[in-house]
Every structure is written in structure tokens, then in C-alpha cells.
Image 1: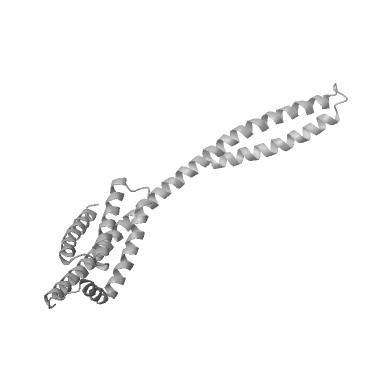
Image 2: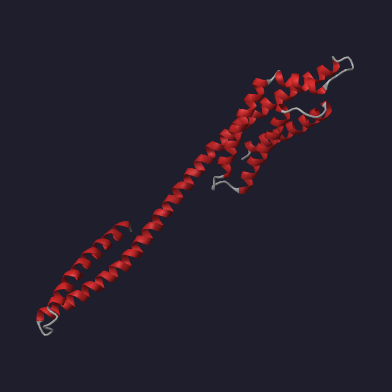
Length: 219
């Protein structure tokens, strides 16, 4: 279709030039309308004009069809690329999600144990704020690492959300999984509340993240 459009464009240009040439010749002989040359130039001019109009219309239609075909091909190529990207992103997300979930669970468990030890070792003057500060200071490297990995996971989630080849239901599963591990990470990196609340939240969030791991494996 692109070749036809190019051919019609060429015919259009040639016919346009021919029409100009015969138009000029026709105009020059306008004072002698009975002259055979005048009549021939007039006839050839109008024939050229008809060819110009026809090739212009057909050329436009051919170019439009060619553009549509190119757009369709580009769309198909993009869909293939999106599907390929989704396969890679899905695998990477699941692997990083499992690793991050495990790291957060490990940190939260350690913090719970240290909190419990601090309570048991206190002499009735337990300072919860001081205990929390001490616990978090003991794990600054782990906290920084979790924050970094959570940021990477967020970027992957956004790639999935922007991928048009992914079903909305699957997008929701990825995003919900990200939100729950984010909440779990925040729970472990920004300790607050009481010890009992901390442990209850730990168990609840750990269960949710574990459920998401299984869900991601099934996608």
C-alpha cells in the first residue's frame, strides 16, 4: 500500500506539471480559438486536471490506508513488547517480593524479641520510647536496605500498572501485594505503639504477605 501511495504521488506530480505546461500553452493561444493547437492544448490541459484530481484523491486514500497499516503494525509490535516486558517484570516482582517479605519478617521478629527482652530485663521502670530508639538504632543497615528494596518494588509495580497488556484484575493483585508489604516494611522500620500491638500487627501482616507470595506464584 505504501508503494501504491508513492506511485500515485509521482503520477500526481507529473500530471500537475503537465497541466501547468498545457495550461500555459492554452493561455498563449487563447486569441485563436479555432486553432487546432489551441484545442489540443485545451483538451490535454483538462485531461491532465482530471488525472491530477483522481490521483490526488486515490493517493490520499492509499496514504491513509498505508498509515493505518503502519499504525496497526506498530500497535501489534507494542503489544508483543508489552507482553514480553510483563513476563519479565512479573518474574522480577515475585522474586523481589519474596526476598523483601522474608527480610521484613526477619527484622520484625528480631525487633519483637529485643522488645520482649527489654521489657523482661527492666526493673519496673521500662521506657518504651527509649527501648524503641535502641532497637531501631541496632538495625539501621537493615532498615536502609528495606527502604531501598521497597523503592525498587514500587518501580516494578508502576511498570505493571502502566502496561496495557496486563488485565486489571492482575494489576490489582500486584498493587495490593505491594501495599501490604509496604505496610509490613513500615511496621518494621518505624516502630510504634505497644509491644502487644506490634506483635499482633506482625502476625497479621506476615500472613498477608505470605498469602500474596502464593498469589503471585499463580499468576
